[in-house]
Figure 1 (cartoon, rainbow, N blue to C red):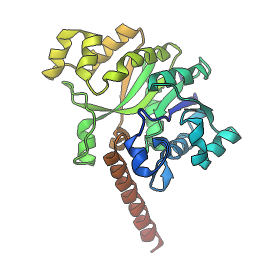
Figure 2: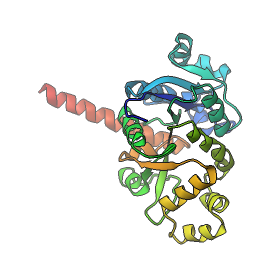
Figure 3: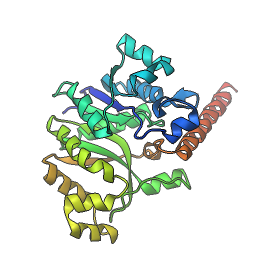
Length: 278
């Protein structure tokens, strides 16, 4: 894997459950097309992927076909071939498996989600370049929980608490080899336990590791080595220096946080522009 390889991208864009609270708050039929900062979340993600210049083909799983007319910009990108649309299945992991089956088996793949409203080209470039430098089949993006809380005080994120520090997921995964895609089969077994990491640890590492986890003795390297041995895939993490990479829009309060972050960024950009003009 070289740093010059262009990745295929797979974007999961269906709601996890019926009556998603973010979609309800935004008045949209699906969370992926809920606007933040005036732009549907999925369009923000697609724009970031294209602007990164490290992504070629883009496949989107979901939202349902009946929802597409509600997001004309997404529908236009599908119709003109900028994006390939696939129907979502009944879970994120199954949708991911379906999407990967439609991509060249030898192509490296970046997987992310449509609710990653703060995703930027810089985040994508950093994650993919660092991923290419690992000796692994797959990588998982994480951020330090301390960085997220320092940048966004009061925000509540799902935290995996380890001896070497708590981390938050970033909804960024890179499959660097065909073998790396086998990680999705592990994901299918684990996705129902994502909010209960101790149960996942018990399944993968055994009951003794649960005590280590609860006592704060388990390390990230230990956990990843166990996953690699269990799945037969070499998995590494990429720790990102961007706290916003750990903020996705799972809840209404997440949407309000993202709106405030985007508003501050826009105001700062405006102020800088006025200063330059003077």
